[in-house]
Length: 120
Length: 166
Image (cartoon, rainbow over all chains, first blue to last red; front, side):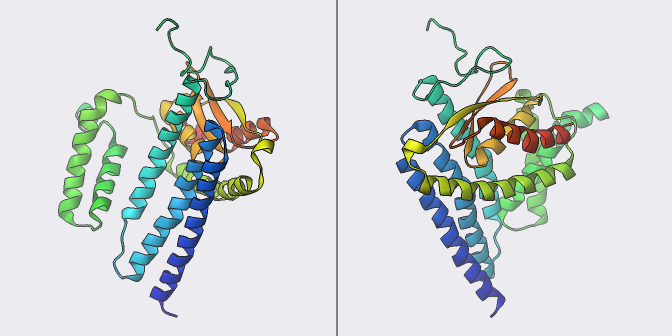
């Protein structure tokens, strides 16, 4: 059992786990019937699913004797950008009133998405 | 001297981060690439500092590191929980809920990190901020007790962030 064989096995295992989470995310996206609950599925795929696939890529590059660091960067960029796009989709469904109306905030007047001039 | 330093490096941490990202993009370390990364890291913060005038006073890196570990662990646990919910709970019995999290954090950077953490941990998505920035609107996929989720967010993440961005 050499080290590169272990790395290949690890890569195969993380590919399996990663694609399992991606498939659950897709099932969630198809199954839920409300824009806000649907939003939960992609955030799951974006974290653990893609994370495991990238881990497989790192392990595979290691087994091939050509270590690569790009995957860590992809992970970092995904972690920074995924919440922003999720936030925008949520804001759109609040703004278009396609979801259940959110409760009032505790201290301030209203949510910033709903805080728009009336006559426009 | 101090003013010249502040003019040259408005965000010293961002300078180092940009240099590190540049070197990682090359996928190999060479002196020329480090120097070029540092040049980029000096120019980019300077020309974008107009849109980013303030910087966090101090960040405790040790606490930040343990926060990252806690969040990564929570992402794994919550992923398994949400996968179970997706596969086992039918739509009719799903109990999504809005929760309102009152914020003690004041700095925009800290609130951004908290909102990002909430979205990254599956099962919760941060949807909106109140118009004066004192509450955060969070959507939960499936919960029996919305108040417990809110207390969890406050105790687990916000308390740590208050210490990090002290």
